[in-house]
Image (tube, rainbow, N blue to C red; front, side, top):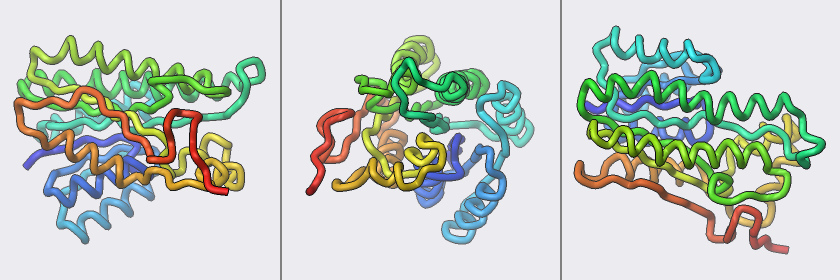
Length: 252
């Protein structure tokens, strides 16, 4: 039985990936800050798919959290086949000169440092196994920029570059490195970005059909289940209505 470690698993793309891989018969180790949501998700996956699910409560921004996950795997004799670095967020949508620097710290610590900490903690286990796969959930914001996206775009550009650098270092250990870079996905993303302003968040997806979390989970499943000699390096996925990060055809 293969094992997937998924960060940010309590909602959105992470939750959808957990369901997809549970349905496919994988064992799961799920990490998120919201323990109550993790436990509810675990129970649902056990009931629905008879899945084997472990949950670890923690914050990827803290280096010790990543080590706790690695220690958990080692202590339970679990060999990680796949790490999905999904935890990430946007905070604020302000022009650079007006931006809240606390938002900057939150995005850098979560989107970049959290991914670094988790990957650094898990890769030695994959190296020891001479096998593994890491999927970094990036963004179209890592391929281009848009007004008032400044530091969020910067963190996702860093993920894009880091993904390529990880691949160069780790391919000799038979470890695949994939980036999935979605466009507009309707999750809690925009509500978090707008600091809980649900009306403002709803406008982001108004007038067109965005991607859904399940669409990204389907892509992650495909990337994780190609033949052993095949590696998907980089995959951009957009809704049909979105031609670029800030170019969306809306109805009305």
